[in-house]
Image (cartoon, rainbow, N blue to C red; front, side, top):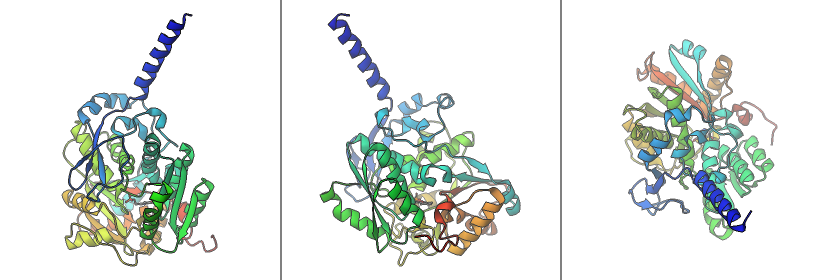
Length: 415
Ligand SMILES: *Cc1c(COP(=O)(O)O)cnc(C)c1O
């Protein structure tokens, strides 16, 4: 073959590869969730200038032309099936452990006991690392890789750290984890086994966050704290796409969601709006309920007091480590969603969570994290008040695997 021919062929291959690799270019910009100020895509960002979360915006008309319901039928059952509405540009940067595509389980026996004809459990515990945090961190780490990051850091009271450690390992990034000393042992060992550098802090997740913030510049870490980078929401929003797809492109009447930082709540709401913009669903929305622990209920308190922001919750404590978030930077977005949707916010005790986990476990075969089981007592309360009727289509989110919380279920010795 002539050198020119070789060159022509290799150019053609390269062009084809570039075309194939760059399938997902529908992001237009990022936007401040408070002020609407625009930021460029494909650059590193944490919070906006106003100190608020950034939201990723897409050309949904174009994305919707490419991502058709028909095309979805042939795609694998993980969250990357919605890749046109995800921010990764180059397919080679996708870091995956098979996250998403979790089952929507009809809870027939529990429903019958409660007098609910359409009760479902969205079981996020089957995600990699045993919690829905995998969705968010898969996106955050993939984007970190795409944007040239070498080291990622996270303050976490539990599952987020394990997920970050797993995806960072797979992406070849260094992972730095800061955890409260009383974090469940499973989360800590998981991070260590997955190769992260773990520092235990005598304090809360907010203290861990302060430590990351203090050191990140000097250490060259990229901070992937909840909502402090724009992409975890994008991963979590796929729960909203999945729900709609699993309900044949309709939405349930009621969603109960264990809320810490609120990425899932904010993400799902964003997904609903995106799907409406693509013409996949109408304007009806589920009533969204935030579920928190009585020992750490900043959103519940703010909701019931009519506040638009949720000040720090003092002396936060609960075995549901995912709910131990005393101050959430996305508070104003969550409170707006809860009110707009006609939903609400309720808190339950740790004892109620453990009891509820046993009830769900024995009736439905799902070993819920205390965060997930917390939805059950709240649902009963909503029924008693007439806010949920017998034929409402209700989804409770089991956000994590109970087996990671053995101390909460009575194990004394592990440490
Ligand atoms: C982090 C976490 C939550 C809270 O999720 P947010 O999206 O931050 O509100 C709930 N449950 C479990 C098991 C978690 O790990």
